[in-house]
Image (cartoon, rainbow, N blue to C red; front, side, top):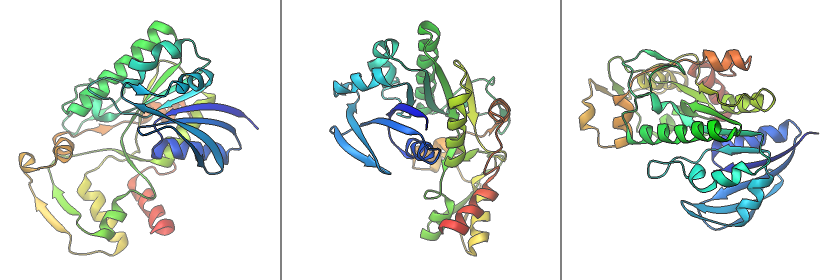
Length: 294
């Protein structure tokens, strides 16, 4: 049984699924996490752990002790006020820690709009949304930290995440899904299980200073995915909106989504980790979810 002392900044769906993977792989896990509310003792899948208050610049001082003891650190907290709050508050403590693996979970929003063309890790980063701009600034702070301190840092740029619980099939069953037709609009996605499997692979094949895109093999439009989901659920009569005017969209998040079009390449991550996706496209992913969770 392998030991791992892991500190998770943020404990959302990716972090929880990663810890579950470590449990399945028979790791002996010493876990600590953060919470935006008060510090507390918690249990996850039979593992007792401490969750420490960390909210912007306010944090439980006991967090520092656990952070210095950690050999693995997973960072999934988004930037605040255009900066990475983990680097801002804890870089000096990280420098004196025992850590040998730091993974920062970024997003493909750093690329901005590429007019439906393919992007890879060497493509120009030109974010158009405020969240994309903040993500790129956060990435750069981790890159600088790695270069200046030799701390072991890798960055994963995640595409849109779907899971067995959060996906288009669930939304279709609830109703309210609209087919929005926007010409030449592509986006990429990835199932959380594939993110977790790649994170696990990186435990034994870590290379500091690297950036990887995490996406599936088949970028496509949101309309195509919704139509396929409706087909396998035998749902008819979905509202269809033709040639949408993006400026008329009230939701800022949706507006940003439709203002950007790109196809994210995953060649680097698949080659480096010698990894075959569990769900190479939404077709395999949605059929698996329908057969097992719907």
